[in-house]
Length: 455
Image (cartoon, rainbow, N blue to C red; front, top):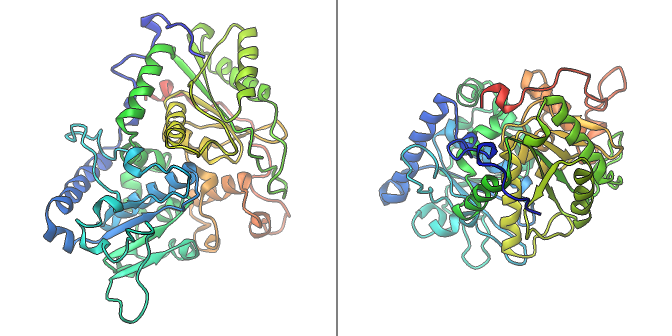
């Protein structure tokens, strides 16, 4: 799968490789530096650990990483505006689970970190942080607030049903418990963006166009094992421009128009032709462009070899990535490979993804890329902003925040790509009988590439 190395002057330069994964906004850099200091104090001073307030992100045991990553990034945003310390309970029900610290090295690439990650894993910190001891079960590895009148634990659980209140509450006034357990497989960050108590601070820190990516580039730093493999592969085979393609062939995509699941996935050539057309529209020189393929199906690789070979174009993929329904979760190596493939997609210039796939959405948003998703009928959906918008936690809070500018975008994007049963009923536009986001995106000038935007 790996072509011969390209001439060094056309390879991705070492000094720029991966630089897009550093936070760029000055206000955010300052806030992250202060956060890193506060978090370090808790880890090194038991007195500070007893006084601190915590926000614990709790993942679903069977959730894919494309579902978890928007949730934990949203939790970091909440921690920044509330002064809490973020901890992560990364529980897996997979056959051979991978711990949080085996996937990510948070804050390790921040200025002054010298490669040292902040420890956030609740299982590693249970005995060092007193507030965790009654909440984290060593035996079952679960996380929950103790129940009953005899419990003296200062703890509160926040689950999806509470999302409808997150767009209006002053978090610091409403949630006063020392430890908050935040359970999410969605992207609730837009609720902070639209919250009158917090929107100004969120915009100051994150802006409005790539809020997920700004935080992910600090929090979701792949561990050196993953990053070194990505760097080595990219330097050897990536050319000046990279067009990423994610083909999810085994899991049916949402069809839209009221059909929730079960639509046939288009043939791989539809993805390839779209990627080829985007590169041509951007003016990428064919001999300076690499097409990178991430997929869950060997047949897609065979088809890519045939299509791009016929057109004398350069296509590559990562060897050793295994396949299966919704990706392979059968081993720790396979789980690391999933993060590796997602990271590789994020480092390119463009992404052609699978409609309704969290993997596509998170990979492109991680890299500040406005993606094109291929729909079940072979048409495409453009995400408009580099956000994992279809993971937007849109359940129950529409009337509260729908008038906010950023929420209008997220509702429209989520509606157009939702796999949630009932989305059409809940979000049916009044009066015209149409659903926002159903129609194809109007014709418009192509979004600027990273190079054109100065990244």
